[in-house]
Length: 396
Image (cartoon, rainbow, N blue to C red; front, side, top):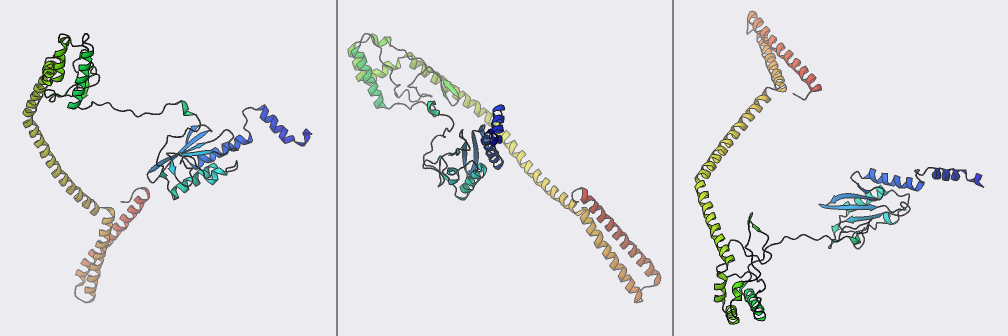
């Protein structure tokens, strides 16, 4: 029975014999992809013959249409989604996937380019709005379940000075540590207290790690290292430690004897002196700055005057160029020729009326007529030159 289906047999043998040949389904797929590309020149190919993306803007809202072609396309309908999620009657409840009837009723004989164009036309007629809660862009071709979500990168900042109540709580925790273990004398590192002497420091005392320099206004200051243990406290008795915890003046006096605080105070004094020295230098530069500022103002005023003069001269040059243009000269020649003709006509009328002699008539009439004909000839020649020039160049 093979002779009944010679075409199918030859087609199957040719498909089997040439692995690189395209089947009718693949050819139809390529035709639909070409239709999509021809209809929309701005479409981007994310993955060849699999995924495409088309951006468009409506009402200052840029939306990306993602077109995914399944493996059995065009027997299976394409999956069309948008990002960011929008609210529209052609979208699903989540605002991600297109549920247009043209997409739901897609067949292998449908035109994919026209379907996308009809979708864009509908978006132009009824502009969509952003969904209230935007989700991440849907991964259509790959599974992103193993990918960690994107976390926004924060910028560390120094906390403000702790209030006085926080200092009292911290001092109690130090006392509890000292009373429970008087031999080690290694209390936990408290937050820096904001006593009156520390409130005027140029930089806040950090409560976090002090190993890294703190940058403020482009300058860095490295805090002195705070030791893990204070040998001075090991020489005090429990009663003295208790009194120090209960009486803030004793704690402050002990705190002022620390070499780290003395170093901070010295650094503060040095910084104040450097700031004062820099301020004095800036004050010395003030007269020079004012002089240069006045020079700039004078030059700006001079520039304004020169600009005004230049604009006036440019206007005058433009008026002169307009008055000397070929068209203006032609118009003047035409008027002058007409005036000379009228004067010659008046001379002829005076002669016919007997008001002038024949010798005077001949001399004046011939002169005016000669002038009239010369002007007419120049006007016609100039007109020809203008017409010839306009064929090859811009108008004169």
